Image (tube, rainbow, N blue to C red; front, side, top):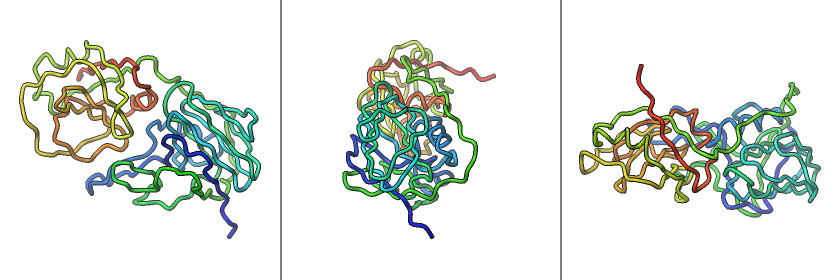
Length: 290
């Protein structure tokens, strides 16, 4: 069997983790989902290098990453737009790039958005845990966030298949519009709370992370005090903690919680949430049941 290729971490960036599509079907065991926050960007990067759509790649956060190729590799960077360089020379963002053995691949600071995705032909081949190679910051499952000097194994090149030269993706949002389906605990809030939530102005808080997008703005008025017994939480749940500011649960969210959930944001809207920088306006749009 041929030896695996790999990458040596030169500069890990503020937060760079291994992510795929996450751990599905294990929430009943208390295991969070994890996985890429911007799934379309992960899938696009993998398509560009010929991997399966959900293959493990690197998710960067704002500040990029620098890696030395331990063998010749083909990579692609998508998600948050950022400069890409190979041994100091400009390379393409959003397209396949050949990286010679020994060369240093640099993904610079994001010029817009938050999270970038760096896919390598053959995929990041760290051992899977419960069916996924994803780092989960809440539970600690999967590989630790990258640190200088880490070596990342890369799998054998994928089979030859047609590869696109470009995969269109939406730009990071200037305004984050999140549709909201009310329930299951909307009755814990004042009757006017949903209408006010859709009318009031919110901003993305700098306190957010992979667990949840936190907001700044008017508190959502509750009709009941206290906490619920812990109950199951889902991706996109909008939980209202004691300060009244909505929190939108993202990929590393806990599987249970005791604060009331006023509604749920559809998964299709969460890729934009992954790319919304602190200070971005947030608007909730109520979905009416037919």
